[in-house]
Amino acid sequence: MIERIEEITLYVKDQDVSKEFWTKKIGFIVKEEHPLGPNMKWVEVGPANDESTNIVLYDINKMSIKNKIIDVSHPSLLFKAVKIEETYKKFKERGIKVGEFLELPTGRMFTFKDPDGNSYIVREDNKGVMLH
Image (cartoon, rainbow, N blue to C red; front, side, top):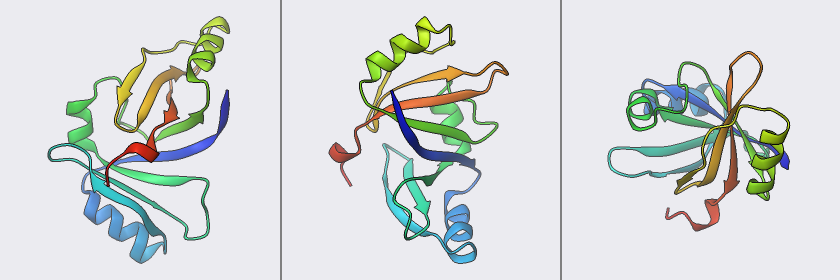
C-alpha cells in the first residue's frame, strides 16, 4: 500500500530557469540532477532538512512528447508504494480507474484517477539502481 507522498512533479518550460528559481529564490537545494536518457535530465529540489518530499522539475515539452499517459497540464503527485502489484490489485478491486504498469529507469509505476479525473502516479522506487 501507499507509504507516503514521494515527490511532486512540476512540468516546466525550462528546467534550468526553474532550478534557479527554487534554489536561489526559494532557498531549496538540488537533491538530485543527472541525465535521464538522450536530451532529458532529472532535476530534483527540496528543502535542505526535509528528506521526505521533493519537487521534480521535468521539461514539459520533452515529457509531453515522450509520455502520452501523464497529463502535463498540472503538477503530478507521485506516491511511493511497496508491493506495487498488491496496491494495483486493491485499487482495481475498489473500482479505481488505473492505468497499465510501466517499467522505467526510476521504477515500476502505474497511474490512477480520482473522481474528478485528476491523474496520480504510484511508483515502486528504483532510485537505488539508477546511474548518476
